[in-house]
Image 1 (cartoon, rainbow, N blue to C red):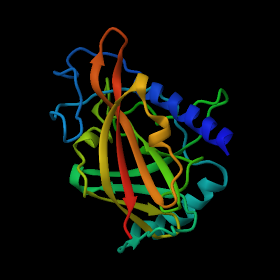
Image 2 (tube, rainbow, N blue to C red):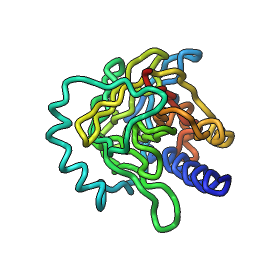
Image 3 (cartoon, helix red, strand yellow):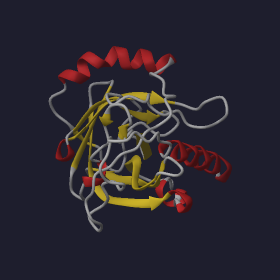
Length: 236
């Protein structure tokens, strides 16, 4: 179904542009580059987004409310495996190696077809794109978050570029289960050459794509030139 894939790729491309929108605040950052994958030098990161995210809506909001208590109490995890898990809205993301422990909001599409992003606050959670598979289902589940805000400084994905292959990732879901993954790749892509077909390619197994801004900050345009993408695969 190439048309569906093209529409999804277009929506993802739109959010990548939004992830690079930033307001420069003097004194917020001392460097003009962000954390990058292991093959490049480690640096401080910063980016801001236009506030446009939304909380989980409709049936997904009800499901999240029903499952939150049980999800918080879930002590164990589940190796997802190639067959995947049944659909269940994600409510929390944990990446201990880089200090990520965040609730997850649900992101949809705006009326103009562009992807919603989380609110522009330093304490804003990361978000799951609800038109992608839920984490644990077969396919690439997409999570996006800010690296910082001009007003509040570091945000939820501030250290995303420090993730390394082999790092564990856990996603808690409304049904009380925990989908577990391992990082397989961390990459920085120029926004103008972003490989949508590679990042969002259909999968025959469960996977995660975690996305934020990075690279060099273009003060003239008020945005970062690149995106950091963390690829993760389900534990078998």
